[in-house]
Image (cartoon, rainbow, N blue to C red; front, side, top):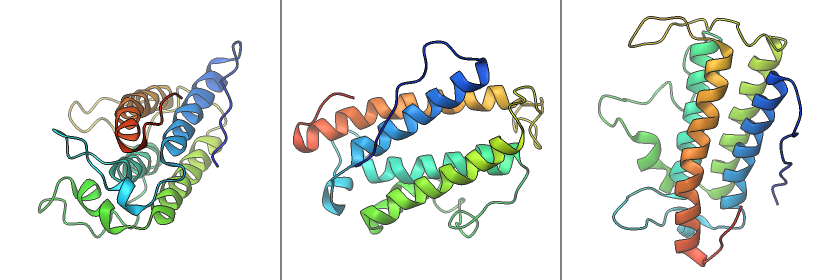
Length: 173
């Protein structure tokens, strides 16, 4: 079972951002604990979103922002070999083919890589990402990426709340 710790009520900015991100990462993993492949693939009309798709999507988002944008790495697998022009939502569509433990491991492994990239920066929230913003060309700071990732998880955790409740009635954090 996934364990989760509340962020501290008083901490420096870097610690606050990191612990809120970790809180939201673990919230998503908690929402998928104990579910089998069929449950992770279940939709709730009118959406086609699934909890398995959320796990895979957020693994992609982690790798994209921390690995590619922040660190400047090339896309890693499984993302590198995807024909994104053929299916822009590949991660959502293919999650139903993955085993639950593989989906959870994909996200956990990606989180570990992301954390290693952030740790290497030594808490420098103003550290510029290796790549500028793709639409504006402006530099992106580690601070912005952390805040964006908290927003990304928080938004999708709301989806996860509804999906999990529709599956088995489980509610709450």
